[in-house]
Length: 178
Ligand code: IMP
Ligand code: MG
Image (cartoon, rainbow, N blue to C red; front, side):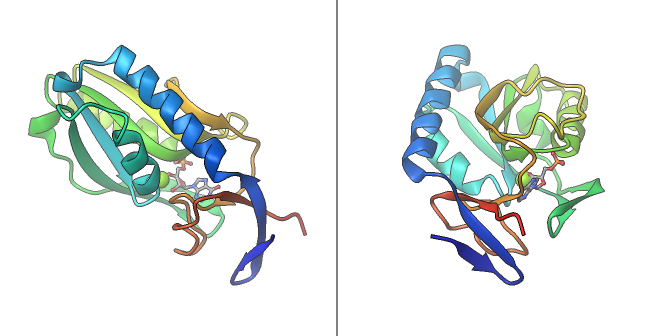
């Protein structure tokens, strides 16, 4: 079933069950790698809110969560600039930080954010993203934990929006070629 938001038509791409399977897999990878008591999971709002809340159910109760707002997109295009809200730097200092993103596209957002975390004294910084677009990526850092590597599609659902709509969909949809 296609789905439309304003001027765009979207078609189903990643089913909810496949997404939850990837979330559980990444949760296991994170548990194996990090000591929850010394780790901060940083949710990049707004887009990562769905992925973050599902992922955190697979992480022990000792882990700490923090939130930051980031913005770089206008419509279906990256603006090439990134705006970040304030970070709780006191919490980050001396801890391992896992940046949790909805999608890593050009990589601008996570690279700017990771630099800021290193500056704030994080012991280590790694990047975890539900979706990753390797063909669009121009970042220096590795994207360490990935749900799905996808082509350069514009997608909505599971936290991702088009003009602030579509975030609550449990399936991920992609823009239909016109
Ligand atoms: P980057 O800084 O270019 O890596 O872009 C990261 C941000 O742009 C993501 O966190 C999203 O909020 C937004 N974004 C990138 N690709 C898409 C997409 O396909 N759909 C919706 N938002 C996207
Ligand atoms: Mg985002």
